[in-house]
Image 1 (spheres, each protein chain N blue to C red):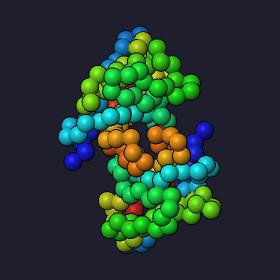
Image 2: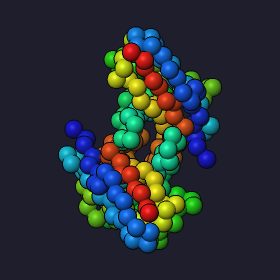
Image 3: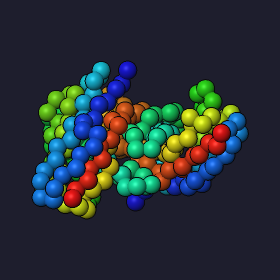
Image 4: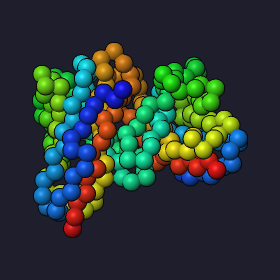
Length: 111
Length: 117
């Protein structure tokens, strides 16, 4: 079964607004990663946050991690039309090598 | 850096034929490669993990005789869908990892859309 669940499943906002996506997971992790997938394409790694970190920034991206609640959030500030894509969280479970992906959030930025 | 090339990007085949998909790391050596399957508007489902020079590790429910994986070098892994049937139609994506460290960042190919008639 999937490790992560993402919320919301779909999000539509106006260009310039901020977009927040949430991810919950079930087991202890080494790190949590966020990826972006444009329609019909492969995934692009966005950001990695380790289990001992609480917040991380990369450009317009801000990721938080709450290991006590087993949840993470991805905030995209000042959204652009080019941010339209599906966003997936993925966890690296302790003792395992593989990534386990959440169900994803389909983000649409309206011009 | 860290570019992964996947070929072909799209293939249509007749039922009963076999299809080979290639995944290449272009500018790094990939100790581990992964093969995923993705249905429309759904997440990625890991099919198998392959390490160079050893047999692939398949996820539960994935038929290893149906989906043959070869990882003959540190830059190339292939997935062969044998005797393909319409239910095998899907989007297949490969990824590669530089090492076995705790980061496990994966670099993805652009995917292959398989349509079996």
